[in-house]
Image (cartoon, one colour):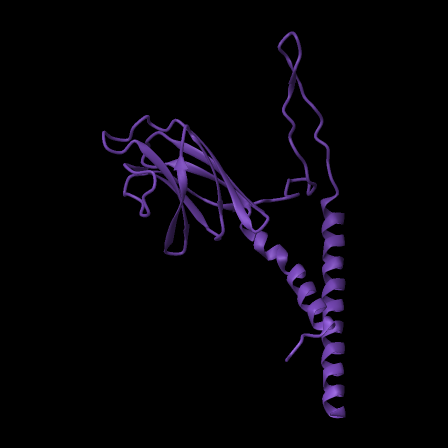
Length: 201
């Protein structure tokens, strides 16, 4: 019975961890704009956590009912030609877990919130944009905190802290090169050990 050597398991695990970041390529946000000058827009975020994409949507100005028959709104994802249901938007909100990557999003008006095929009544649509960490004009990561309000009603602007995204990127790049070199070394050692044993038999 064939039993994998511990070094093979270490190599495979390291390779899996090294390329795990690729699964997060579909993290991002999307702004779904209304179609044809009609009302309704949505903001959607997608974050990869524990093996699935956590999709959250917040919509504004959706009509109470699109028509007498169609009074439900459903969010869909598209990847190439494939269109799949994410879930029904209830009271302007949605939260769901999905496993597949996607590129574009659309909201349709439906008579049934559990339909498997979108209707032709598209309320809003948009494309998923990847999260842009540290892509500000200064080249530094930042966040914009909500302003605080004083008793007089005036806003106090809070300074925006800056990060060291270039240094972080350099460290991550070096770490990836070191890990990849280590993986290649383990593969070479494993192959040489296997060949040496085979010759000895």
